[in-house]
Image (cartoon, rainbow, N blue to C red; front, side, top):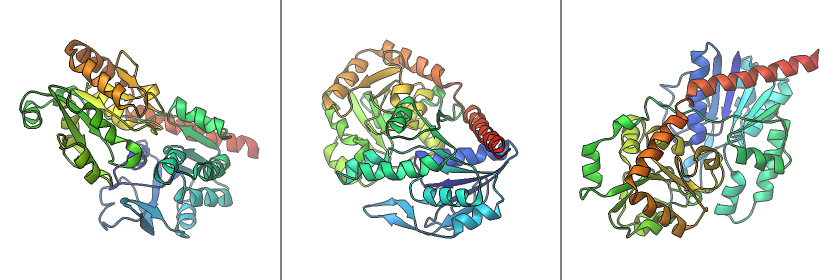
Length: 373
């Protein structure tokens, strides 16, 4: 199968869209398929040296106020690359700007398209500009409505899409690397460095951006014997350093280094209310760490309240503080949540989810063939 993955983001970017697109390309190669990636250009000319397949970069500009995010510019390269690859199917990863061009090109060439919904753009519009939700949904309806199938990462995302008039939706979650992220990486030396007084380590991992509401971690300041650890970077970094003066900020970490940090935490606290899935929650669970997350979006599917972690009302610092306080006082419950979390994700490998995705591709191709006949 020849697949073109048109993605709004790709490594070296560090975010859910980029990671999922990379894992998809890797899996397709492992299964003997022929993927091509089309993504926004990045500053590093050697960025794609380790990519699993060819990558076509489209001219892009950094997003004002958030240079880590690049937005693709109009380019004929998208249609030309899809045609030159002789694609059987186009995979649109988090389509909004580049993905719209990919959908247009696929329709013009008569190639089926699968659109993967990954980002709550309406929520982002509400966060950053206080308006624009309607425009965001109109754009999403246009691209997803033209696709042969939309894949939603969670039950909450599926309901949201249906409520806004988008059809032909199926659930498709995300895999997690249960070999890299595992409880056995818990590091006593790292823990002594981060918590020299033996404090309970409560960590956040992710982008430091307004929509992630990392500022809510200020609500756990002053809990006796608790130390906050923040991993990631982004435009909110300086403000958060001021708001969380007692926290340890470790910057962006990846790979085995990140896995070691995850496993060395006592509690993982996610704060963002706009997650369509929330990969870091899965990585914490794979690491055997109990999770506290908002009762909204993707975490509703991932966190079994009272068994693998705790769900709290979104945007409520008092509820977050109460959850941390309760887990800090209950080491047996933390251990039980961690074991249950690990068990819950052990079957959610990228191999299993990748094969499920290929199954969606084949169904779409079969449907197209049946209609043509």
